[in-house]
Image (cartoon, rainbow, N blue to C red; front, side, top):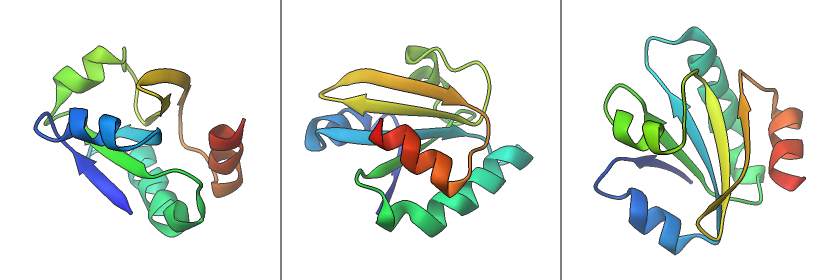
Amino acid sequence: MIIHLTKDNFKDALKGNKKILIDFYADWCAPCRMMGAVLEDCHERLSVPVGKVNVDEDGEIAALYGVSSIPTLVLIEDGETKSVTVGALSEAEIKEFVEK
């Protein structure tokens, strides 16, 4: 399931999931749209839930994680940032990012 995260549900999503992959994106960003399509296609095969944060609508969340370029994926485990990657990835690269 892909969870659309906002300032209203972000903390609950972190508390409710031991591990979560967060996609920071913007609607106008072509690489973000490409990565969004890949995540839509593969999210059910990932071992973690996927959350999406629109940086134009919830920039304060992006600022908390130091997001300055998009798309950015942040893997959070037990409320702490485990790893970060910037740029569009393939399904195989996303799986590797989540599982490392």
